[in-house]
Length: 281
Ligand SMILES: NC(=O)c1ccc[n+]([C@@H]2O[C@H](COP(=O)([O-])OP(=O)(O)OC[C@H]3O[C@@H](n4cnc5c(N)ncnc54)[C@H](OP(=O)(O)O)[C@@H]3O)[C@@H](O)[C@H]2O)c1
Image (cartoon, helix red, strand yellow):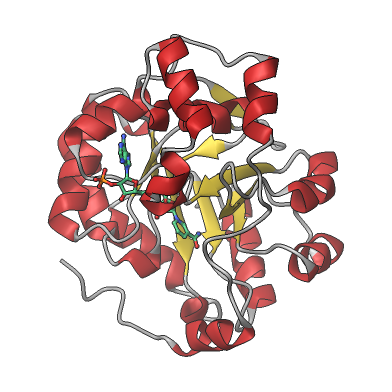
């Protein structure tokens, strides 16, 4: 594992484990197992309803807190609730969060971002993130924010390489954290012939080649899995390097196509989804 330096000097591991759609018991076990097997970055969110389980997994791992990088996300329904960050900390049983994102550009996201800036100044969060803020939203945010974000978490994989976004954020050294790095497990992406060819060349799996590509693109990658073999394999990618020629071949399969095309109606739906986040296992 390597670390990337964020634009505020904080260092972040370039690979971690994602916990989207992972039930609390599985999330607890996966987080504990991942940390015991060398991972130091965990990604969760209010909306995944597993922050309490993630907190338990962190404690059970026995890994010192200062070695672990925890990222989580505020959901739109709590952007204007001044208790939301403290309650997120309580669910995780942590006294600071390494990276807190605002999850979606909807509802009163400017107020949500101000909450992050305030918590950052108070030391409750060590870095600020935005998620799903491509296009007009990232431009508006960068024009209006007081503190520039350190990380943007967005869909990114070899079929969708976020070129437009990168041309906007590179000058502020804002790092991309890739979600759906494996296309949410899409077999046509994973089985692309270029990955099979490179898997033979390096004696690695197709998934390991894809994860290495993310890292060599400069992305932070957080594959989601509760399968212990996959957790171990996904971390075992630091004994080989893709060449420039390999990277060029992978670039040729870019389709500039997302798996998840968010609509304004979905943003409206997110705005109206108001679960009780404290009511989770
Ligand atoms: N900010 C956002 O709006 C947002 C949205 C989506 C996701 N995320 C974050 O990004 C993370 C990653 O996204 P994701 O989990 O949805 O998708 P993903 O990482 O692209 O794919 C997950 C799928 O890949 C499979 N997989 C993982 N490792 C594998 C391996 N070594 N071999 C074969 N299959 C493997 C998993 O199956 P197995 O369980 O069988 O391993 C799972 O079905 C999430 O967990 C979450 O933390 C954020």
